[in-house]
Length: 249
Image 1 (cartoon, rainbow, N blue to C red):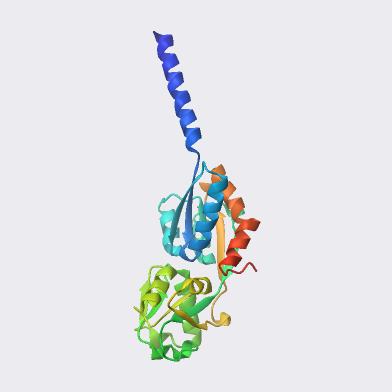
Image 2: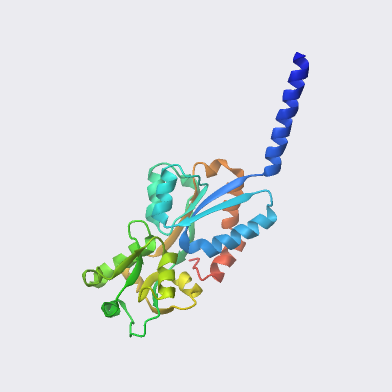
């Protein structure tokens, strides 16, 4: 009887192991919202070559994502829209430091549907509502506020600013005409159907828009996460980034 029970348990364990193997792995991504189209395309491409791997994507403001990871949210790969939030997680020993590198670069522009002549930051006082990513958690908003401060127009615009949860929400407000203009990345402006670029924010007024990426400590132990991370470093990824208007240098 004891041998029979042992055989049953062995058989059940074998089934569990085989089932787990058949299900394949899982990779959790926490990605800056402005990279949504790039990562969607790259994860689809990767999935076609690795059908047994499930890619779970979480998009949002970099600060919000970093806080989620700090609070225990599942994440294998983190890509921020600035260096600050990557440093934040690294200082809390939640990232694999050896894996961190720069994924891509971007630039800040101002978009809208207004008929008013707006060719620079000093013309923004002519507008009513202006969308900006919440500077406390959205790098695009932080970059924009830095530019407003350096241009000396921050105070006169503070009552006009409408805070958004991420850069894509800023674009949505501008597209719908719910604001007169919005600060977004160049790559988001390319996707706009209604709003147009009114001007490019001078790059000497804010730090370069830099996207660092890295494996979390959990991701560094996940072979499927490592495989996808290597894919993000390859030729396919560079081609898709250029397609959507991102800079590689």
